[in-house]
Length: 113
Length: 112
Image: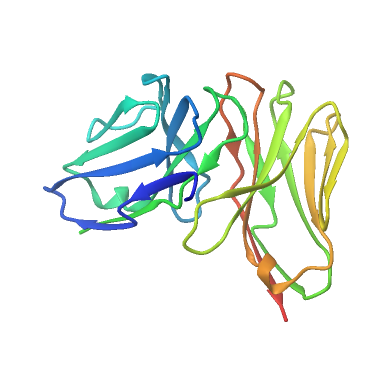
């Protein structure tokens, strides 16, 4: 089983829909991250959680709402998204916040209609 | 904050040739430099990393060199193979407790 698993792999939604992305890590790590990967742009860090507590929010719009119920699971709740939010959303984990290396999942490809 | 520039954005080489990807960083406090490989439909996978107390690190066909004075580091792939075709990302971090800053990526194409 892969270390970091993301579901769904693909998601198409309208701007008024509400959906959630899920990430699960099986590595025993304490820190989890959400990144946004858009075409021709560097990976953008969105949120960081360490021991279930949010430690970073990089000025992400409130239409993205993260949730971390425990150190193994991370969710990204989506509502009222915009077309420019279409991207690959990657989850990663590491032993502790900022501790390297980070291990990535395969991402959720999100398309906003 | 940290800024990481990566060049070239695309690189095409013949199978068996070497490939070199270069990155520069701005924060002199950075001391951890990983390289990730991202294949189509997959997430980035760590392939090699280096910390600032060493100048070079090798792992079979891949190597990374670091010049802290000039604030640049490079990935070297020798004897390239078609399966090396992917997007490669460099990153930098000031170390424990700090986040990674990624470069813009290099699409490497190895022609058989």
